[in-house]
Length: 167
Image (tube, helix red, strand yellow):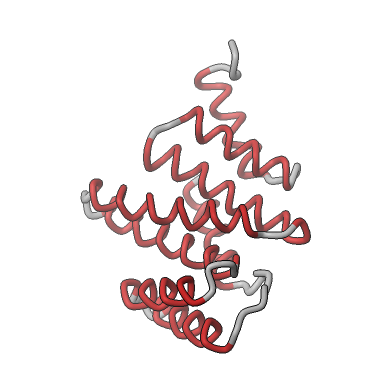
C-alpha cells in the first residue's frame, strides 16, 4: 500500500493534472520555482515558496494540493529518521492543505479531489492511527471516484482486520 500511495503522490505533484483556478503570474512563479526545488530535493525551500504562493492566492486549489503532497512526503522523511513528533507536526499541516484542496476543487476535478481525500485518510491511518476518521476520508474518496482502488483496498483491509463499521 505504501508504494501505491507514493505513486499517487507522484502523480498529484508532478503530472500536471491540477485545475488552474485564476492563478496569477506571482502564484505561477512561486509554484513553479517551489516545485523545481522539491524535485531537486530541497524540500524546505520548496515548501517555503509553496506557502508563499498559498498566501498570495489562498483560493487556488492547485497550490494546496501541491503543498499538501509535498508536506506529506516531507513527513515521511521524519518518520524514517525516527522523529515521529516532528513528522506528526508536518502531517497536521499536510492534512490542513489537503482538506482545503478537497473543499476548493470543483466537481470537474472529482478524481483529484478523491486522491486528496485518500491522502487525508492515509494521514489518519498511518500518521495518527485514527481508523474511524480515516475510513470516513476513504469513503469520501469513493464518493468522488467509485473506482478509487486505493480507497477500496484500504476499506477492505480495515473491514477484514476490524470488522465493518457498526458491527
